[in-house]
Amino acid sequence: MTPSNSMPEPTTEPTAAPRAPSEVRAGVVPQPALAGSPKRRYGLVILGVLAIAVLAIIVLLVIVYFIAGLGVSAFIFAGVLAIVPLAIVLLGIRWIDRWDPEPRGALAFCFLWGAGVAVLIALLVGAQVDNVVNSLGGPGPGYEFFGAVIQAPIVEEVGKGLGVLMLFLFARKHFDGPVDGLVYAATVAAGFAFSENILYFGQAIIESGGSVAGVFQIFLIRGLMSPFAHVMFTACIGIFLGLAASRTGGGGGAGFFLIGLIPAVALHALWNGSLFIVRDFYGYYLVIQLPLFLLAIAIVIYLRRQESRVTQRHLTAYALAGWFNPDEVGALATGQGRRTAMRWARQHGVDRAMKRYIRAATRLAFSRQSMVSGHRVVRAQEEEAAQLEVVVASRRALRGE
Image (cartoon, rainbow, N blue to C red):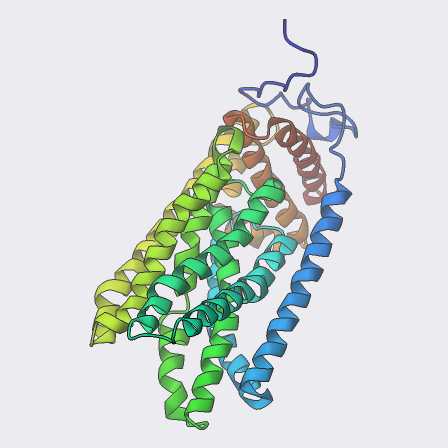
């Protein structure tokens, strides 16, 4: 006998649509396990707002620390320089995240965590290590190597990765798979690199006495040649946590975090260690780091194509059930189709409705993927009901009803 409160089994195929989408009424749901539209969980929303507020305060403390150490002029100049690599990285993240954009609140949390908490962790641990070393007689000849190749990679990647893990644990609704984890990790890394670049650029300005030549080399290496370095490192953690999120039951977050931490630390150590091992940094960059960056791009492209395949597979099932016209699937599940649909929508003044339609269809596909894999079944069914209502409303808007 099955207990009455057991979790409902995921359905293999979507429930058939009504004879016409316009016949869908409020309160009619596509899955038998649902009794109505999903309830808003305001507690998590309030918790998220409070978390962002606390993180913003921590970032302000880091800014005060930087100003105290660098001075106002050097801080402002370094901050302006640091905006350049930050803009490059944010444009890259936007490209990765275009298929199924993550909530702005979650991205804000990630950026503030990287720019504030992760930096604060690195500073505090570094200060404690310095205190211990000084109490033992001061730094030895290998201390600089230890700090750059062992301490920094471990502490910084743990600090950044914890932010992604927090989202995995407390915002699972917005954590569907490897691309989501990659986007969150990249945003944390972008915040961390922004703060770190201000510190490095500011120190270079002070040490060179404001000389352009003294600042240019570090800006070239950190700002133009390797703006995605931290992104590549922390992305390993995000991708593995994304894999954990997409598994049946979605468990094993801590284990996958530790697995992703290994390549993150290794890549970080490889990058920092090159300054101690190779004499021709630019040659090393071309031979080692550039191929690694190209490999990272290839991985991103592969993961994005996987998202497209998931969307197309499940929207095809919904089309067979009558929720979509079969010809619409290509427009909703391919990049070219979406661009064509948006051009048509802009010409007819319904671009906002088309954006909602595309986003709802994408979220619908990922909700179905969660149900098929047995991951967050009840929440996925609730999400399916909500997105089908948005799909119907968007179709009406596109038809001018």
